[in-house]
Amino acid sequence: MEVESVKCDCCGLKEDCTQYYISEVKAKFDGKWLCGLCSEAVREEVSRGKKSCGVEEAVRAHMSFCGKFNSNPAVRVADGMRQMLRRRSGDLATSPSSSKKYTRSASTRLY
Image (cartoon, rainbow, N blue to C red; front, side, top):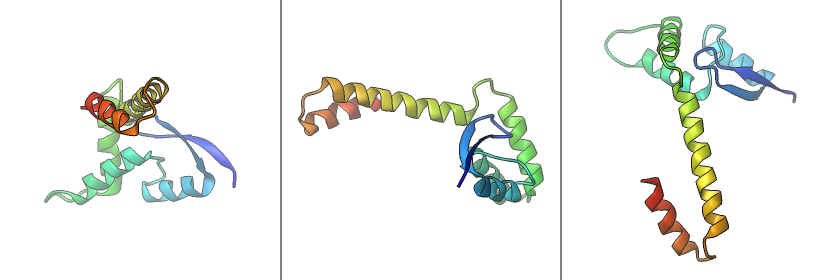
């Protein structure tokens, strides 16, 4: 299976996916590619509340929401995960081999 890079039409986050997966996502969102975070937000918008809105309207609303931020939600989540992994790998390199001690130091830093 060939993998290609695709950019979210809402937030601009790039992901590497198979063509099959890309076409499946586009079929669900009126021909637009949405990353996992944006697709969940759109699904939630479609299913919530008394006012029923269609997929096309929910995609437009979410695209507008993402456009209001220089740093969009998906990128912030990815950056947060990257920072956690960097901290963890730094902790592993500098901490003693005791996993109990590592667990305490990691949990105090995350909160």
